Length: 286
Image 1 (tube, rainbow, N blue to C red):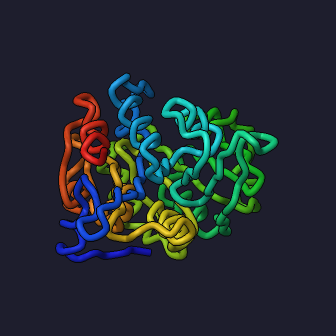
Image 2: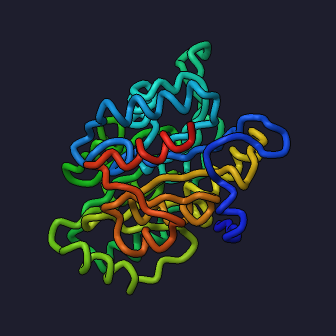
């Protein structure tokens, strides 16, 4: 699902107040995590943390939108001080509401699942040596071989490929150790996956979700729920899984280190993650 805005709508998203009413603008801000809020070692700078806390304190709707699963997302919300609000996880497959008054501090308000069998079978035929992992509808990660990643947010349970085929999936991850990112991307394109949404990462890494499910589709549902103005939507990201989100936002900002196709989807480019690019965008909204 992709949402398009005209250039006129994009240019209305600037810091300040509503010229007609004299009221402060309330932005709907979507923030990627890895490569945006944190570097590729998982570290967040004091400047990014402070800027994120400032826009939250100012009363804007801040939503973390990430490929990470919920368990790996919650610590980031804590770091930026997002105690009440929402997070989009698993590239749009799971949406959380966080609130310290809830029994666990959060609740899953939306989870979109799909049958992974057709995609897995097609991938296994073309990529027989790849490693496979799957987030199921219970929040568990099932993985073939010794496959673990920080984005899972949980210890992956060993499972056979056949067990993955029978699961009800929120997210499927495929990782190849015997090909470059370019070779992997070419192989995935050649497979011609149908009935799912997928994105290829920086390395030989593939994320798969249900058809039509992206960060943008989940964010649009939240924007409508919260009554946000489409012209005051802002998104910041750096990966190929952010392309739909950057196109969806009235102000879509690509990080400086983003690949060309991600930069092309954005309305502007900020500094890299090493230059606190996300903080620069957030400061402009206060």
